[in-house]
Length: 283
Ligand SMILES: [Zn+2]
Image 1 (cartoon, rainbow, N blue to C red):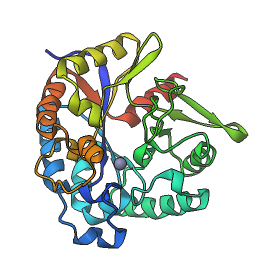
Image 2: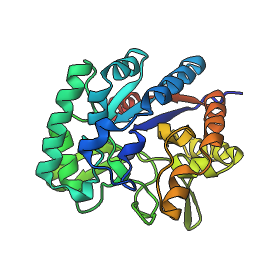
Image 3: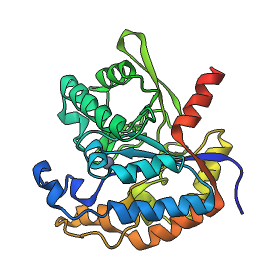
Image 4: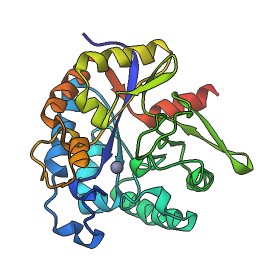
């Protein structure tokens, strides 16, 4: 049965060769055989069958390689949003580099579609206290309405245990602010549990994920789900070497696809930009 609360479905659109664990130089990416086309075809088909909409945070270099695929995403009613130029962590960029990449990327997106890009998610949730001032300032300068880059749970790679768990307004220096829409994280007494995307979504039982989404909804918010096309693609090249890295990237890709289908049947999902526009109207 479908729950009537409207949740938010997001994808980070990158291919297997963008993963930093592999360290493949950017100039060799075009030689890598991509998996993104069959992955997105399958996702679009499932979204259409279940009448759900989503936001696709897309690496701009990938968009330039597959413009027709990007056009399909837009023509089927989904949001195209920004997931960096070349999937570099923001912790390795200066403000100037971030802005230069954004400029190049917006040129790519505008050559593909007329849909204005208004949302950003940093690779590896890499917005933090050190870079958030310049990130928000530059996003606002280019007309962005929201950011979705702060993971409100501390992991060994990223995240902030103290960050607010629900949609909020991120204020930075100089009186500049932007809507911050974080992924859904559960909180019990003094601990938090990620469950709504990526590795966590792959390893957790569906019943737990379902209860988690309902709990976020009873707290009065939409649950933000985040997935990568590779999360549910057991056919992708599985060539990462490190033990921990292989666990993070490859565990239960087959089961993930099944859970994703159940999720689309049990809940209603919409785009992140439409949710933010409703917040703006209400404010
Ligand atoms: Zn990414």
